[in-house]
Image (cartoon, rainbow, N blue to C red):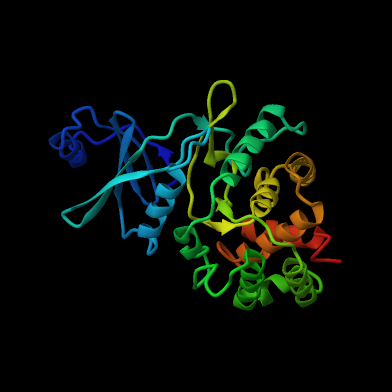
Length: 317
């Protein structure tokens, strides 16, 4: 759940009384998002009061949180301790995550040309940490947003699962994207061929939405929490995580293309990934998320995906 700061609670807020009745006498409303309202309960916990039905894969997501929390990472990750149904409303009791967002969303915050070493070091620490968590059955059962089946269903290899997802996503609304991207059908096939030709890789936890607001840092710039798993979370090649992170760190700023190229090179050098592998994965990400928010260039994400594909060396070879 993305938190929008909102500390002022109505004087008659019934949830404060509910939490007080459960022993959390110091409960305080600290944020709200599209999914509900968040309350700090003390002792490192928060309560989330959901405004609607939870995601269909909520139980799987909870298990994924637990799978990741078993590992001693240098940063905190979400963990759901308990779930309550209060008069038909879902309430989850979760770990309170420390720190502040690394940066604001690049759609609203100006990023300078020079890539701060503090930020690149934080990204490397997060990528290394998540790559140390083995992929689990629960991760394999998650469905990527916009798709109709678990990514890993019927596929033992991540590369084959991703190639199949590219094919399904191209069928969904490919005609809309083809209007903005030359030789769309050829690019889809070149991307799928590149994915299927990749060598075997480790299977680890994949977050796949490591935009700056989803990484919390401390006063020294060190990553202390990673949040908002679920958008594209799965078990797969950690190089895919690195490729997508390089592309999405700065999506909309004036230096976005330069930052993506710089981070792609940095991750290839520091983490030992083949640059062409990262390029293929970046094409796959654009091809599998382009239609999640809109179907023409009036939508920022659609426009970004089209731009990524037009300059991607694998897609447009």
